[in-house]
Amino acid sequence: MEENIFEQRTNLDVLHSTVAAITGEIRKIIVGQDDMIRMIIAAVLADGHVIIEGAPGVAKTITARLVAKSIDVKFSRIQFTPDLMPSDVLGTTIFNPNGSKFEFKRGPVFSNIVLIDEINRAPAKTQAALFEIMEERQVTMDGNTYTIDAPFIVIATQNPIEYEGTYRLPEAQLDRFLFKIQVPYPNLEQEIDILSKFHQLASDSPFSQIIAVLNAEQIIEIRKLVKQIVIDEKILRFIAQIITTTRTHKSIYLGASPRASLAVMNASKAIAAMGGRDFVTPDDIVFVCPYVLRHRILLTPEKEMEGITTNDVIKQIIQGLEIPR
Image (cartoon, rainbow, N blue to C red; front, top):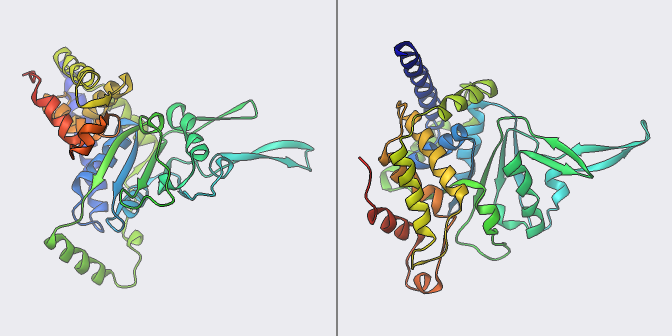
């Protein structure tokens, strides 16, 4: 028994060093934005998708591309536009005259890391095309099912400021994202560091500085280890209390689903593993809840008019519960 515990701790040390290596590669280019980097890596470990929201120019897209560059897997980028069709994302069936039969030509979503830039630019029918692939990692076309090779993660970006020519993401799709990351502007010192770093790069591409430190097989093995992270019964109850409270809270019109409970659990395991621990603490739960819940709950119109945010309500819910120790 003791030998197994020691072996698990050693594996966590390897995981911790791998995460540090990926973070180090990204920080060659990105200044600040530590939370965004940390949560994208956590999503990769927890087998979840991420939506990144922030004003133009705060490094949403480049950070996602740098994460993909630091991992040796297939990467594709899809720019969502109002005229984009589902077949442009998923693929289409075409007739092959050589074999006199129809064949399925796979779209760009058949990759390992898929960056969807400005996801709210495409109409509802194109957004809906992602439902099956994000949840079940497969595409059904003309009665045939095509599976996606693991690992598979969608990193989507959207601009919260500009609403002209955009389409609101349906709640069913938002619920399929493990995290929603809100990216702020850098402070003065970080802005100076950005100018200095890109001045030194001169004409070099920032992506030429990045080397891959992880491959697909290693990600799959690390994910197996993350799933084995210990979580106490008291902490599971704490998660359930948070989620069920969102369904009865007076400020919330639509509460979180059981999928949110699983998301909090899986995310907290990833955060614990990234911290070198083989067990989840209540602090892990408190940390991940805003990222997991802010896009899954809807406030009442009255609270929105008062300027209350989902982050405020999530904080209020957690403060009203007894945190297990």
